[in-house]
Length: 189
Image (cartoon, rainbow, N blue to C red; front, top):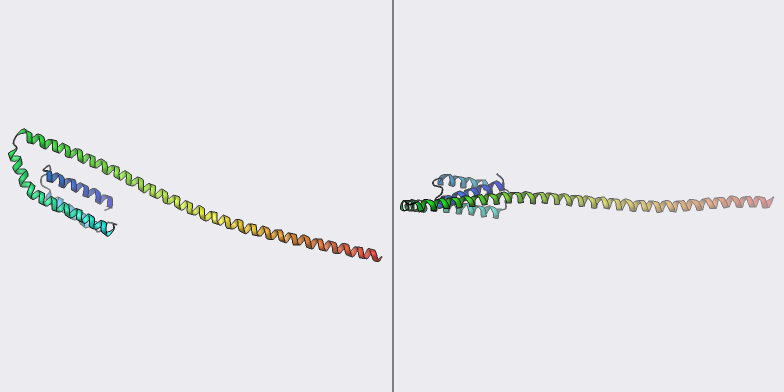
């Protein structure tokens, strides 16, 4: 189970507990308790920080406590109030409350979908920024390599220029030596 799945399941159970407390959803306390225990068990497998795991544990514990105490207290109170309101007003109020709860659930579901999209977009932005960082690092390494290559070629060109200058000088000395020898021979003859 992923963290997002865990969050979605907790939100679903919190809505179910809220409906149970308001009297819209009768029964199901055992299934709610079982689902909460399963969430608590799955909490250990999630890749979260210990403080976050502890916070989520407290949320589950609070939901267990409120749902069990509200069912015990609210179960008898809801039955007594239903027996007292045999008129049409109680039915209409219950219908309005149920409609309001459905609207709230729809809004919460839309929020959850929007948050899911937002999470996906932030992950895509994070991946793209990592890709840009990697590209910039590669460019920096390539630039360093090109700079070093230019420096070595410059040194090589300077050395080659110096070598050519010495070669020309040596060629000039050799030519002058031959000319001197010819002049000496012509002068002796």
